[in-house]
Each structure stands twice: as C-alpha cells, then as structure tokens.
Length: 115
Length: 236
Image (cartoon, rainbow over all chains, first blue to last red; front, side):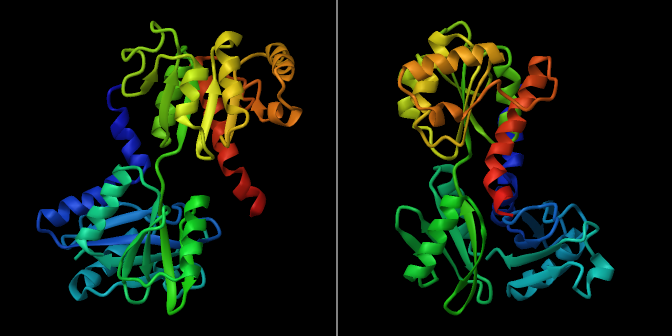
C-alpha cells in the first residue's frame, strides 16, 4: 500500500529522466531518446523517453519493444559523436525489414547526448 | 541536452510549473519556455513559436512545430492531472490507488474525520473539511476530475454546487438513477441550468456490471479516462 508513490512515478515517466540524470552524475555517458512523432497505431505516445548509457544499459521505452534494440545501437554513435539525430521507423522505411513495427505504425525518435 | 537543462526540467516539474522543453531538431539547441511568459536557453523565441508552445501546453500535447529555421520538438511538462474524490468511503480506497497508478494526483475530501484517515488512505492528500469550503481553494481546472461518492446530499450537493461552474473535465456522482433524479431536482431548485447539471455523470462510471468497490473504481476511472480523451477522439 505504501508503495503508491513509486508506482505513480512509473506512469509519469519520471524514472527515465531521473535515471538519466543519476547515471550522468555518476560519471556515465548517457543518451536520451524521445518519441517526437507518431503515425497510425504506435504503442508509446509522443514524449516517451528511453535513456541509454554507453554500456547499453537502458530504462524506459519508445515502442512496445520492437525498435528499442535499434535505438540503443544508434545511441552509441550519438554518445561518441555528441551529434543528435532523428531516427525514423515504420512501414515506409527501408529499416522496416530489420526493425519494423509489428503494429504497422510509424515513429520518429530524437536521440541526443546528455552533455 | 545539457545536464543543467535536464536538472532544470526535473526541478521545474517537481515544482509543478507549466512549461515546455523546445528542441531544435537539426542543431540540438534547446530552450525552456514557461507558460507565464519567461524563457531560458539557446533558441531565439519569436511570437509565432511562443504562441505554438503556449497552445501545446494548454492542450497538454507534445509535438513538432515548424520554426523559422527548422522543425522544433515541443515537449510539454504539466503538473499531474488531479482527481478530487468527495467521500472517504470504501470505493474511494481502490479508486485513489488506481487513479494514482494512472498518474493522477489524488485528493480525498470528507468532513468526517473517522473516514478520511491516513490509515485508510496511505499517501493520499486528505482534506477534513466540508466540500463547499474545501473546493474553492483546490480550484478545479480543466485538468481536474471530480467524483462524489458519499451519496449523502449534505456532503455531495455542496461539492457539486462548487464544481458545476468550474472547468473540471469530468464530474461524476455516485447514486442510483432514482438518487440521481432527486439530485437533479435539488440542483435545479438551487438555480443550476440543465446544461450545468447535465455535466454530471450519474449514475457514475461506465456500465460494466461492476459490483465490488474495486470494480466500481475501475468503471469510474474508465469513464474519467474516456472523458479525458474524448476531445481528441472526436478530432481524429
């Protein structure tokens, strides 16, 4: 019963940004991925976050699990170069064969390094 | 993103301010824009951008907007939605917990001290006052849902009277059809219009055949969710 506050935090997405800050303050290299556009059915709304470190640890989500692997991979480059990028996934994208969305939706994800 | 920017976002969110983090998607430049007019950061904010950001904050909708030199992502940070429950009754216990899981800041109002106790409502804000005193300072806005559960007119009616002319996005009142019909009559006598009274969802909750307090809480939270998203669904 007393755990209510913690449960709320998850639904508010609090843990992802807080976790990213905690990782950074602990000296780790961190990237933050954010859903910036969606079309059709997509499991996570605009504004959803995924935080990734250089050891490929991650917290949060930007889809129902279908593109996280690819985003975590791309995030490594963003951490190295420091340059943000927009990743596009969906049925019209060539990546669809590799990491398509089972739901048939499309999603754009912005990935940036936490400096 | 600069660590200072993230720290600021987290601190402002903790302080329950209304703001947006604006990101230039090509350069990665960022600014924080507050609904009260201030801004802070690397992006030059013109009138068009400020207007778009203020609309996004008011609509509670993050998204991409065109800027003068490229697309901007506007991430809205608003305080949690609020649920004001009138009546610290049995149904209020599962409803407070479920609504909390769904992201609501829950307040339970009941003048009867033996009902609204921390033991019965751990972690919930409790107000031991009559609703006509408790409601105005809580100032129900368009991001607030109100549910009355006592089905005692002495407690529910003043609560409804205090919120029927507010911007609350949802107003629900527990009680059978008969109870509700009597309530409509009383509120009409008190001078409320049919449109105002028509805002009340009564009997409260989606019709799920719910029986137990937890099931009734599900039906209420489901209806609140439906009301919250109705505008978008109609627009889509």
